[in-house]
Image (tube, rainbow, N blue to C red):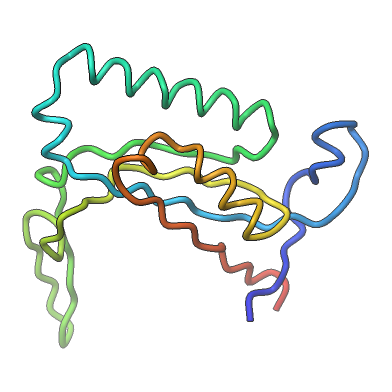
Length: 141
């Protein structure tokens, strides 16, 4: 069971400056096919990035935004494993998959349904997948 975290400002406080309900943090992991970015025109890429900038501005104004970043392509990644005390690294991601992790948003939401409503507005949800996961709060243990 995930403990409910009292993090940041509640939706009441975002709207009115008053304290209200407890919020939980959720990580929205954005998975898309990297190859699509490589094959789209500059105009298409700029249009999608414009949508991301608009989404980010909107989620900040709504008070859900905690953080977020885009990731460089998987070709820049290194996977690290430690087995029997020995560290090994491999270029690229651990698994070959159709969709790759391209970025994330860390948000605050009342509950999973609220978080899903925010995630559904992320532009990558139309062409890829946005995984929504609650953040484990160990301070409540």
